Length: 65
Image 1 (tube, rainbow, N blue to C red):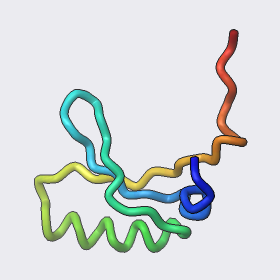
Image 2 (image 1 turned 90 degrees about the horizontal axis):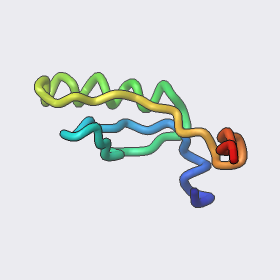
Image 3 (image 1 turned 60 degrees about the vertical axis):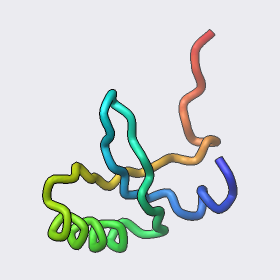
């Protein structure tokens, strides 16, 4: 995870087939992400969009060996 990505942990993601996701945009604040999400849902009602928090790699749980 790059430093720029860590500065913007809130992201709007689009759900794609086969359980894949695509990041549409990143934000520093949840309120900014939610405001754009509401606008995007009105413009494209058939698209599945959601707001996610992507934790920095330092805070992510480490895999068990």
